[in-house]
Length: 120
Image 1: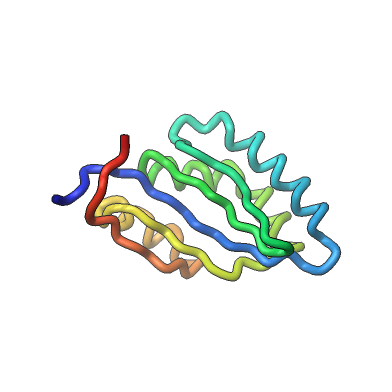
Image 2: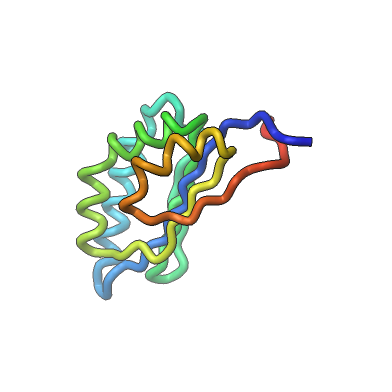
């Protein structure tokens, strides 16, 4: 059974430069504070494994994901001065991913098409 869920997730993994983890964690607090008011954000947070960081985030739809990237753009620029993105995935149904492919082309993410499942 195909899903009707329009949720889009962006799944970035970062490798923080040597000696910059404390600074990166300070940026994480700013990302969370800035994202908290986004109406289409379903969840948002950061997980750590040493100097590797994952941002766990989901949005109601493609528009919510794009609005988030617009909102945190300057913070992301700061983060990329002290960390590299090592992997970037975008997950969602094809009709939503189609709205993201052109705006996110420069980031070269890997797209995963959501076909089955549910969300409560």
